[in-house]
Structure formats: C-alpha cells, structure tokens
Image (cartoon, rainbow, N blue to C red; front, side):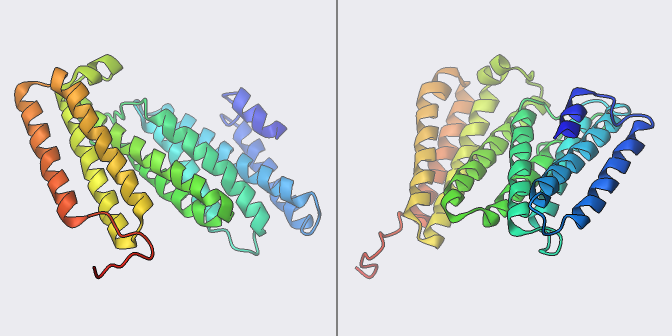
Length: 288
C-alpha cells in the first residue's frame, strides 16, 4: 500500500531508470506470493500486489503516451490498462488466486474502472491527428470495455450484491450513451461546455432519440426475459424522455429539430407498444 501511495504522489516514479526499480519490486512480489501460498498474509499481499501492478503499468503507459500525443490518448491508455487488469482478474484461474483473492482484486479494479469512466465523461475525446468519432475514439473504446468488464465481474459478486452491480452497470451504460451523443454533437461544431451543449438543439434532439431507442431496447429485452422490473425501468426512461421533450426541447429547440424529435420519439413509442408490451405477472394466465 505504501508503494501504491508513493506511485500516486510522485508523477516521475515510473520515468527514466526508476521503472526498472518498479519491475524489481513486482518481481520480488511475485516470488513472495509464491512462497506465501497458504499463509494468512497471502490474501492482502496478493490483492495489494495486483493493484500495484495495474497502477504502475497504467501510470507508465499514460505518462509515455502523454509525452508523444495530445488530446485523450493518455487518458485512454490509462483506461485500457484498467480494463485489461480487470479482465485478467476476472478470468484468473484457481491456481493463480483463490476465490477471495480474486474477488477482492476485482472489487478494487471495478472501483478504479468506474472512477475512470466517470472522469472520462468530462473529456471531449479529441483524437488528433485522427478525426474524433463517437465511441470510436481513445476514451470511447476503453469506456465500452470498462462497461463490459464490470458486467463480467458481476458473476463473481456475492448474490446479495448482484443487484447493486446491475444498477452500477446500468448507470455506466446510460452515462456512456449520453456522453457519446454529446461528443457527436461536439464533433459537429458545438463547443464542449455545459452551457453550449444544453442550448444546442441538436444535442437535445439527439439525447431524446438515443434515450428512446435505449428504452425500446430495454422493453424488448424485458419481454424476452419476462422481466416486469426491466420493462418498468425502460418505461421510466421513456417517461423521462417525454418530460424532457415538453420541459426542455419545446422551449429551446428550433422548430424543424423539435418536430423531428417529436416524430422520432413518437414512432419509437408506437413500436414499443406494438413489439414490447408489459410482460404478464408471474402466475398470470398468459392464454387469456
């Protein structure tokens, strides 16, 4: 833990020749873990070493990329390392880590991946010299990877915490979709500021359509699974869209954009009513 705090405190710890020192530390840690197998101290030692290894690699790659590229490349490199570390921890075999060691390691990396994802929402995702594209940018792809990795980590969670994981994954997915729409609008020329995005008719219409499509996907999935809870979640999102249309879009959007948004949302709502009606309650007579 002291080594991890030192890494976070000193921005140059992985620069120059000191990177060799970190390699030595991690190598000694691996040997010590092999010798501690079955010892009570192995679990905290394993978890701390795993977190430290991911932090060192993320810091080294982020600093290295930042020295040669501008924009979101460095932030994306850190996110990619966190996702890779989480995937490795989730898929670690029993001969490498016990169930408790793997779960504690995964829990810390899930927290790191989520913190990175939320922090990345505030970056416009510029990919100079490449064009900035929604999702297909240095932080968009790691963000999708983080979402998938956290979803995979859910299967390791205790049964009583899985609903919380579902809520976290839903929040990350909703945030990622929202930011992808805003980045697309920013690519079209809207400044990356809260005021400019809020006042943008394209941003408001894009969010309305994207959220309604998400509601459609949720309700269709709910019908296929027979999940009334998921259907009601999609319906709540649809209600949010309708409220947004009347409270925000109706007063801000340009006439043509406003009409287009209302037509698109209305068409998707009709499709939801046709293709994804409310699933019957458990025990209800579905033949009636």
